[in-house]
Length: 218
Image 1 (spheres, rainbow, N blue to C red):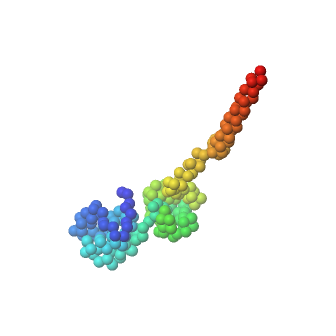
Image 2 (tube, rainbow, N blue to C red):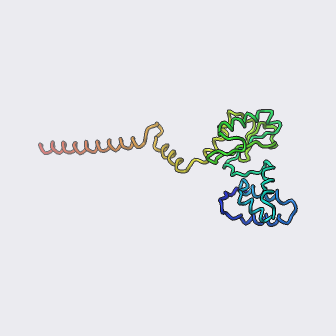
Image 3 (tube, rainbow, N blue to C red):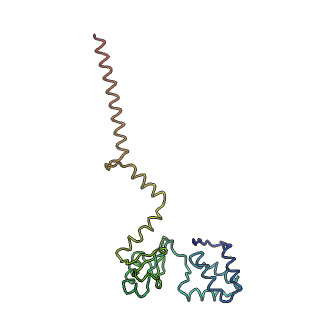
């Protein structure tokens, strides 16, 4: 499902409200509800945790005890793209730690951190079930096998390109269209062509006058 961006003061979505109400009468419902909240928003916003506390009649301190105990739960909004390095045995033995170190250096954040532009979140995860491709980097659920630290910029570049602002992309395209196949600026070519046309026009006018003068002498 697509992730919904949470803004302070937002109300719960109708689907989430129904899910919480349905599970509120079942024993052991807290973890299931928190899973559903994180599925909805990508993390567990504080206001939503407070609303879950109210609806399930569970102390907020108990909810945060669960959230901080299990590593699968996030308390901060993740980046738009999630970059996960498999830390399962096969991947670890084939260089997963080096991949994580390279990502930390590239983005300047620790595992579980998010870049300042909210574009990427990096994290180590348990086995993703692709041992034959070890080491594996997952980007938004897409597996990149036999990855090396040197390949990481190329793996992540397409995800950055997708976010290029439309205005900047338009400028790039317009700039490219202004050059002809010979690498010359079409605007310059057009200006030179106009000057040439004006010059030929003046020459034709002058030539007509000379011919008219010769006819007059006869």
